[in-house]
Image 1 (cartoon, rainbow over the protein chains, first blue to last red):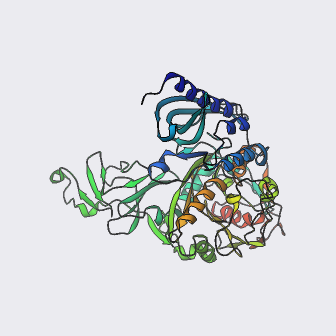
Image 2: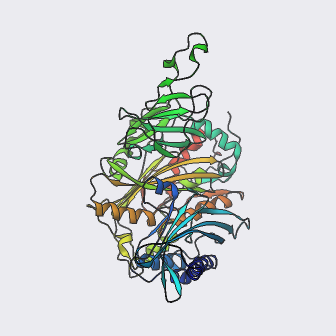
Image 3: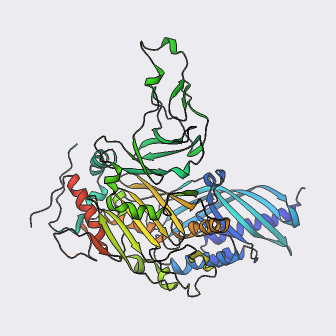
Length: 163
Length: 391
């Protein structure tokens, strides 16, 4: 079923909202881009694992409580221990289709650049595809689950922020 | 190849920083350590569970192909055609009935035999396929953990592992009957020696999670075995209360059987580290890419007898706890980078915690000591022919 342009605009808006939250290191806003539902989730794993049927990820937040804990990791537990880095997310929706109960399955390509503060040299952190289930409602959309599938099977550094 | 001239302190706890950053030192390490008389863990048999399953790997630039033959036996080959040396398989893992080199279509069985090659009648006199299998490094295994060595002089694996064997076996669920959950692969901007120099001293200081989750260390010890300074670390598994800091405390929940020695870490010279903590079973296959970069493949496992709920628990815990983005390990990754940057400054890296003598190497250490690194450094200094200053 073709999605109307208003729905696609809402979908693109939430994709950009999460990118802006991440690039702004605003973990509270990142959390708010997810549906407040027990079944909300964020998974970050290599496409290589996924293709082999291996579910293990770099990040495996399979419930809303773990999303909230992810915010705690970044803002409290790890604070002051890592080499901070800026990111820039570039996201482009490539597929969107309605699935059961009115949710929309969306695929978007992403590339994430990083600039560590101690080198100032910009590099590619990761590239891949987001597989999202997006929930529509009240004139806006939010993410129920996001799978960030990384083509980058060997990370060029440790990750602090979600991709 | 001769080692460059680097003067070491008379004190046993000091390591000149330049050994971490010099390219000429790395060239000697390749010859004496990575291609020399050492055993290197390269895979666990459970990563290739079915006939025809394979995995490719790299040890200090040498391409390897680990495959389970149709006969069920796991073998390690050089990933290089026996004809002109072309890389045979390119995928990180997969399943094949045969391995075919596309260059001249030489075809190998999953047991490594040459079973087909075109234009054979025009080959050199006396050519016989039997003389052209995929070449293999020396291989031995321990409860499914496969080690290779590229030197004919390396002693038997049993002797190489020495007293570490029991800890290693226990770490692999007691019997090595593992089931692969997946990988976290990462490159660290650090020298391989900086990657393995981790210690027990830093744990409660660097990792704020321990304090925030009210996670006290249990009783434990570190012991060093064999001349190479392999380290075994065993401790009571302490289970944190969580202190309300985590909304999903299942991340630090222990569902296993015996917490009395529930936490184990081993470090095998030169680069292999493995850990079993809570319900995480993690084998870390590491290789230098060059003197400034180390690549680590964190492989995580369940046990074959686990029920579905236990597998799910291990998957959820393994992904978020101990890897390059883990709750109590991301900071280590950051330290690998930062220590390597600092090692470009002059001077020495100095161990303090647990050092009882400036001239004698110990073998038993407290769990929060950093001195357990010293026996390995002493072995390294010796095989690299670096001389200590006179006292």
